[in-house]
Length: 180
Image (cartoon, rainbow, N blue to C red; front, side, top):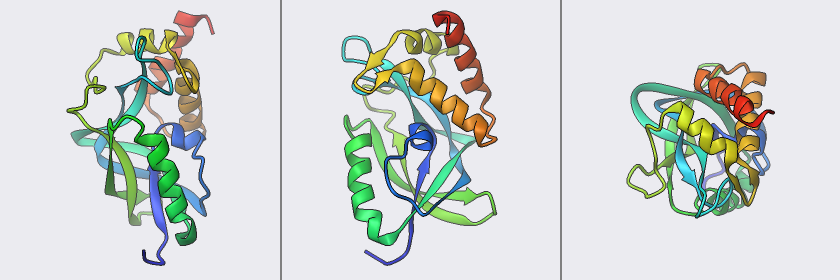
């Protein structure tokens, strides 16, 4: 392992609950992927019998995802990687990738990102937004209600100045469905 700092790209719950130590965080853009509720959650935000939905990076030409790049100290990398693997690879629906992200200051860095395996049984890309909203409104998993995941992510994106129209629409629709 080199003594260089490493980066982790967060686009969903890592934004508001990274769970690991980091030196700095910067708004960053990952090209060729978009943030999408394209993964059925059978552990954290749903169950095997009643899956919820969680975000994943879904590959799409000419797309881009704004998120956060977390700079991890070299001495913390092994612990961070072990934590992320335990958290993110619980069902093998995500694949680890080292991808180039562009930081807000224009620098490009290599960051670890978790992208969806489109061949995995939990992949559900292309669901209409209203169907996503209905699933999110009712699902609950080991880490709590699916609504909490959606609302926390949407609110934190807004606080960072990241506009995601689909996330805004979903939050509004789920609030209507749940009376929140």
